[in-house]
Every structure is written in structure tokens, then in C-alpha cells.
Image 1: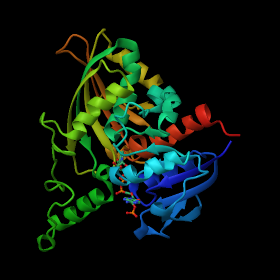
Image 2: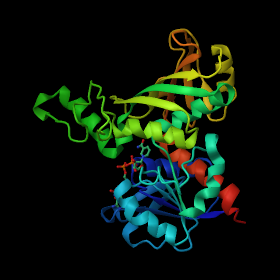
Image 3: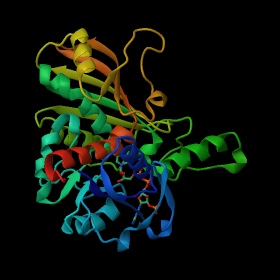
Image 4: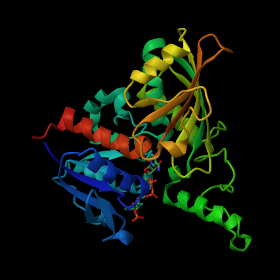
Length: 340
Ligand SMILES: NC(=O)c1ccc[n+]([C@@H]2O[C@H](COP(=O)([O-])OP(=O)(O)OC[C@H]3O[C@@H](n4cnc5c(N)ncnc54)[C@H](OP(=O)(O)O)[C@@H]3O)[C@@H](O)[C@H]2O)c1
């Protein structure tokens, strides 16, 4: 079994991680093409020990290719994903464009892998928002045991969630703080991100929530359970890679903190690091380059009847984007395409 795979947005943060992960996980590839915008034509990107040259998305013919992993943002996705899908190439999309389309499965393989059987309605599968992906991995095994009623989540999201420009802005602004002549005012973010935190990701909605906060609510319902109530506050922090979340969970049934810890230890995709001592928890710099969603600080919330608090950290470019997309590709190959 091997597949003809296209990586779209191969010069970006997520696209490069997709190539790393396809190689690391030895995804069965018969042929691979890497695409970006015309300005990057011929740019070299690494794939294992090979170097590949990017082609222009605008002129690429998707006919005969099995799957395309898109990481180019909603605008380019809107133009090119339907073309790939119409050519019979199944799109696995990282943008938010198709996530809420009832005809498009939204998948986190640890949670709802079987949703992949709905992929042929549009030949498109959506990858969730980075903050949602790691949260539902943590929630799923606990929900199976004690039924979640309500989740209160606050996020601490790294600048790489805002693409290459986000990383550059934190880097340049941090240096410029020490050299005021070289002042770097905010452009990608709405306020100074160096040595600061910003409680604003994506646009504001009429409700007062931001779109990022709304995404966590809508996507958790679509992936895990439409009955679960979620309220989110999403915050950008001056961390390069790795999103963190403080999650408060209210269950229908009582769940003891020790049992919750054991359930999470056994669950797929999760690594529990939870010692009640200095450094006995995971911080974002330690999760970079890892596949796992790390859970720490698991404890009873005694202010409600059936409550648990926990701390959840993951590499947003991996589980939050590229790894999840490659895992979907694996599920697509194993369950649907079964090429051989
Ligand atoms: N970063 C995250 O944590 C994260 C998590 C989940 C989802 N996502 C989503 O993944 C997507 C990519 O994010 P990213 O962080 O990788 O962004 P990025 O680092 O800014 O990279 C964007 C990529 O898209 C390409 N691109 C942009 N417009 C294009 C066009 N019109 N035609 C062809 N290629 C085009 C760029 O090519 P050039 O280099 O040629 O411009 C580049 O390869 C976005 O939809 C984002 O919302 C990101």
C-alpha cells in the first residue's frame, strides 16, 4: 500500500512539519509533490534525507493524486481545495474553511476516527483548530467514563499558531525591546507580544467572544459530543511553539482525581506528567517536537460537585496541525482508500 501525496503550503510552519512527520512515521508514499505560492517556486524543502523543490499551487494538476494535505490558510484553500477534490484527490485541510460544513468530517483520530467514512461527500476532511485538537484528546477518555457536562478552558497559545509572521514578530520585537532605536511596533498581533500577553485571537464576534473561542466550542461539539457545554478564553503568549490550556471539567458523575489520572495514563496520544513537586509538570518548551498531548496538575475541583482541573500542553504545529493531519491520512489510507 502506498499513496501519491501532495503537501500544499510546504514552505510554511505546518507544511514543513507535515513533511517531517510523514517521514518520521514512514507514511507509505509512492510519490510526493510539494506546493507553495508562485513566489516560492523552486524553493527547497527537506523530506527525510531528500530535498524537494516546491511547485506552484496555481498550476498544479491534482488528477491521479490520492490525497493532498493543505496548510495554506482559508483564502487559498477556498480557491484550490475544491479543484483538488473535483480531480478525485482527497483534501485534508488545516484551515478553518470547511470545519463546520456538515458534509465535511472534522477528525481527531483518537476521538472520532470513523468519521473518515464520510469523506466522499465532498472529498474533503477538516483538521480542527490547534487548541481544540489537544483539548478533545484529553477530554475523550474522561467523557467516556463520567460524561462531561461543562468545560471552562483558558488557553495560553504560542505565536507559531499565527504562522511564520507570528514567530518573526515575537523574535524581532523581543530584540528591539533592548534596542529602542530599532522599534518594532505590532503588525501581526494587535498589541506588543514580547514580554506581554494578549487576550485576543482571531476576530471579535457580536457575543463578545472571539472567533478562536467560538471555534473551541463549535469544534468540541462536532468532534466529541454536541451536548457538552464549553466556554473558552483564548490568550496569545510570548512562547514560540506549544499551546497550554487550563481546563476545568464538570462531570455528570463523580470522578476521583486518582482515577482520572489512571484513565488519562492509559489513553491514546496522552502522556501524564503529574508530580506534586517543583517541576513535576510539563511546560510548552518541553513539548516541542513531541507527538503527545501532555497532561499535568490533575486535581479535584472541590467548588463543584463533580469537578476536575487539569493542565494540558501540546506542540501546536504537531498535534494541533501537522501530526493530526498525518494521522488522518493514515486513517484514510487504512480504512477508506486501502490501496494495494
Ligand atoms: N500554526 C498552527 O499552529 C496551525 C494550527 C492549526 C491550523 N493551522 C492552519 O494551517 C494553515 C497554515 O498555517 P502555517 O502556520 O503553516 O502558515 P505559514 O507558516 O504562514 O505558511 C503558509 C503557507 O501557505 C502558503 N500559501 C499562502 N498563500 C498561498 C497561495 N495563495 N498559494 C499557494 N501557497 C500559499 C505559503 O507559501 P509561500 O511561502 O510561497 O508564501 C506557505 O507555504 C493555516 O490555515 C492555519 O490556520 C495552523
